[in-house]
Image (cartoon, rainbow, N blue to C red; front, side, top):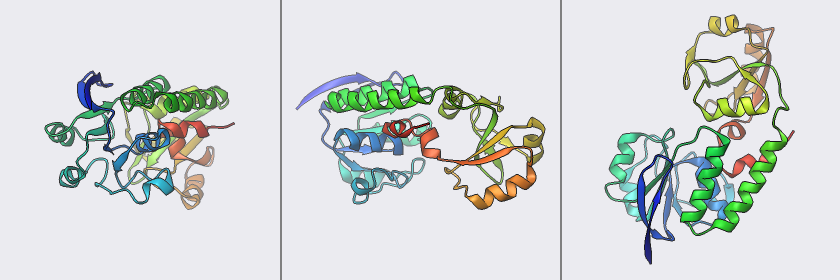
Length: 249
């Protein structure tokens, strides 16, 4: 097997046995993409739930921010795929002492397409990767500027947390045509009063990471009667892999 050196999205050089035969994925969106292109995934996080039939029998190595290095070591991966935001730096630094670790760093749709292309290349699966990227580009282009309104996108409660600037969610909101009222960086905490003062036309309640349900919307409509409170599929808004194919008007 030939070793090749690649540059990941954080600008790090990663040398791997090409193509990799045993991959551990630390990111749900990327796990789904890897399996969709036919890569040999041998380990996943507990949040890697798609594709359902293929992941259900894969070993779980913990969460995205508390993965167990001893369990990963037992799987003998020749490549680990992670993400700058999803995973914690100290854990990644420990892993890269023993294994090749390729990291993505994604804020835009362009970044996501580049991630998929790069992974397709390093896995020697460029054709299926290219096909999926084409489907994702078509789906996301079809919904460009199809939405409108001043919005707040909530990802958590107690305390309220919203998607702000320098996030993939913010980029996607703008792509869809929304105006994100949250000008703070990353995922700021908000009080109920602050949300009221921002006077959003729409409040989008994500199905993840906090599992917002219809019961939460009923209470929210009482708190913010002027806002159109909607439950949205968090996977569509935050998964930057092949799940982007499922966007539709």
